[in-house]
Image (cartoon, rainbow, N blue to C red; front, side, top):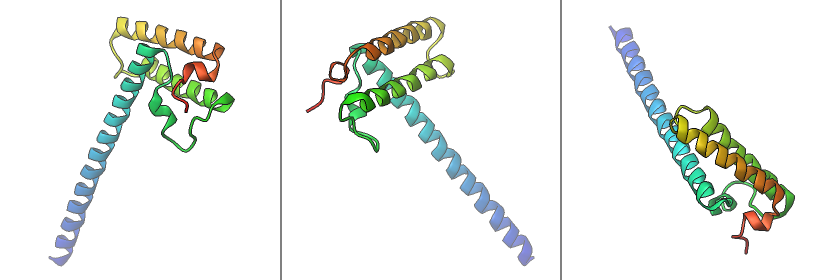
Length: 121
């Protein structure tokens, strides 16, 4: 009888823990998708690096080749999201945004850092 109570308690604990983990994972994925859409929207509207990119992460955008490389890498992540994710928009919108993002990326490669990130102090 005692063993049954212990096993039941362990099963209940595992079920509760798994539900907490799943809820946390769903919240995290939702946040990442929303952030990616916000960043893409800013890039599509302005053609510039979002100002928020320079304030986050272990490496702050200080200018020069490293900052440009990191910005291009982040833009590549957004392009991959639009290319492969079922969470990106439907067919025509996806193609339109994907083409525009690729054009912006080509422009960023040719431009100087100060032109694509004018928020520098």
